[in-house]
Amino acid sequence: MRVSADVEPAQPAVNVKKWARARRSGTHGLRRGAWYPVVADPPGGLVVLGVRKDNVPVLRAHVEFSETEPGHWSVVQWDEKQAGARRASEQNYGLTYGVCPACSERVKLATETQRLACPDCGGEFPVDWEHPC
Image (tube, rainbow, N blue to C red; front, side, top):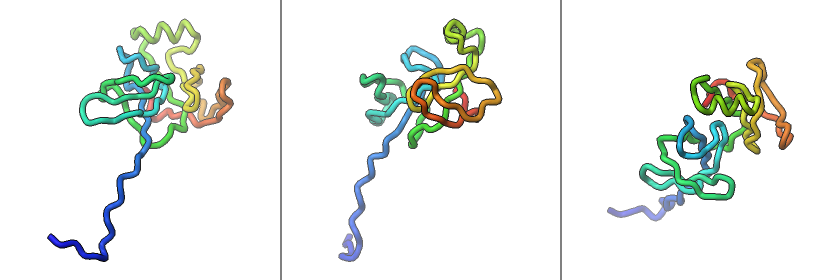
């Protein structure tokens, strides 16, 4: 097969940074609602996330991915029978709380909240009620 001289060579793929968060609670040690940078995404069942300056392998089936940096508060909703619900209640977050996309601070949410400033980092972001985790 001959390639014409006026055909440009294929450009190398751009390294797209991905983000991931836990789909549900589990033994993976991730906080629900917090987004973590994807450090490595090899083929297979594991993905490696950057969690508090450590590389943590997690089953791909346990996380959801985003190819854009998170810019919305994650909404975490617990069923009162789940173990995490007890911990959230003990910390006065309630069964539904928000997680800041910039610093992962958790805050109690009222259902009518559409936009919220983080008391920790000061960032102001919309609340993602359409995609709770």
